[in-house]
Image (tube, rainbow, N blue to C red):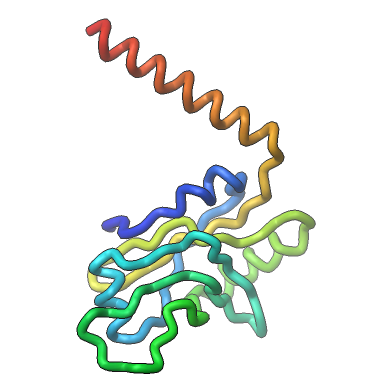
Length: 148
């Protein structure tokens, strides 16, 4: 699996409770654009309607050789999940403060997949703790590298 794009802000803003891997229904030109790396998940989310998972707000740029004049880079895209996975996600969504967010776009063979996570939003003090632990880890790694 090759990671094409990772939503780093999602792991900073949310505490990930559970992760799933889903397929995406794409147009032919969209998969070519994803292989080029022209995808952005910032500000996107997953909603569940009529037992279907839909990716909203993800930006997949127009493929440079595409001739479709009506292409919308922010269109809603259906995610392909098993019924059992969809049932688990809807059970998580019944609790308050939980949302489904895309974490990364990966290439699995010739198919594009998306990692989605069920997450609970972090409070401001939790984000500060994340920053503090990340900085101390960096300092420790630097000290070990310089010492050896």
